[in-house]
Image (tube, rainbow, N blue to C red):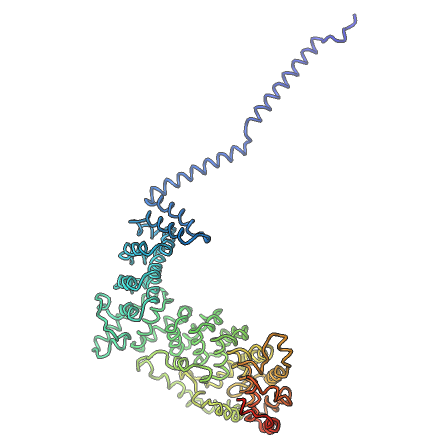
Length: 633
């Protein structure tokens, strides 16, 4: 029997039904799996929920621990708007007013907060005058608490910044009786220093008087007007009173020095006053305590520089060594400081350990000789080695400060000036033999210097606290260290820039002239190359310098006067067979006197009538007589 082709057998039907069931189950599984999220997605959702829960828990804890948490949070929100740069002044002031209104009555609690204290500082800066006065009235009674807090001390300083004259006096009065205590505190000392910087003379003395005696700390108005310095205060007082003041100052200053809080100018002023009345043993204790890196932090003020000079002059060799080593890596920074460079000058003048000075100080300044020569204060270090104590280069107050930084009592000065004399008595013959060969070379140079107005008194050593002969010390610092050779090379390379500089011109002049005692000639033969370089610059045509947009050295103010000095004082010698004036005349001036007889260059041309080189003067007279220079001067 044949099977029907279109019929389906029971087995086939069974297979079909089973296949449909399988496909149905697969589709259901697929659908259900598509509805479910992947496992990693589930983990992310769980982490987000946990994070939110933790954040909410942290918020709840902060609200519980910090009563003003919501207020601080709202204040920060307004502060973020207040800080925007493109905000109008009225809108910023309005935001500050809103913030202060929310904080009213809770300013002290907000001031000790890390963030809220910064919000208050901005509010004081941008709020209206009446609102600022309200803040001032609320916080002034709590000034001591603000000063002692790590965050609120910055707000206290802003109160001083924005205070009127009457408010400033009230704030300073609020510090009365707590000045010394606050100066022993890391945060409070910054507030007292800020007040000291903003105070006038009488207010500064009011703050400083608390170092003198307990009565000045306990009672206001005890200090008489016109008696600011400790010497004036103690004038006419009994010995017991002077001893009590000295003891109280020592007790007040000792903890401050032990804690290392020596950066503030009020502490420096108090130390200077203390040294002016202290005994010799007390002076030695202060020098011993400050010797080292601690002293470097004090050199940025005038009083700090005075203390530094005292430590260098009165310190033992061991203490001087600590001071110099403490400056390692910071010599250039100190050299550029208007007060710090004075301590370096004192070190170059008084320290006998020239090997250490060469290793720490000379080696560091040798790396930046050009910048040092062009700097207002840095160039004095080089001039101190080239021409020490010359009044032309050093102001009178600088020379006075180096010789007598603090008016020390007489017992502190005993045996100080006799150190050099005793050394000369013991080793005088040896020193004379060592330098005899050098002295005969500089006779002519000394005569020229005297013609310039540099007397023998100007060349005396500033100190008197050193045992080494000044000439030997300078030779070791300038010649043996290689500084003279490096400096001459720098002057040759940057001759034009140094000549045109108001400070570099003195350096290049002294190097070209060989320096005091002609030490530069002993160090290097490049001095003649420097003279040639200056003459070559003068021989350059004016058109080429105009193309370089640089004024010609004969027409520029500083360079023309420096070249004039060289012409007047240079003359041939055994060390320099051909003088600078002869080189300049031959290369730049001869046959061009009429062209240069105008402006600043006229001074250079007229200097040839008085130059020290007789041959050049006679040769120049024939050409200069044709010009009527007197009418042009």
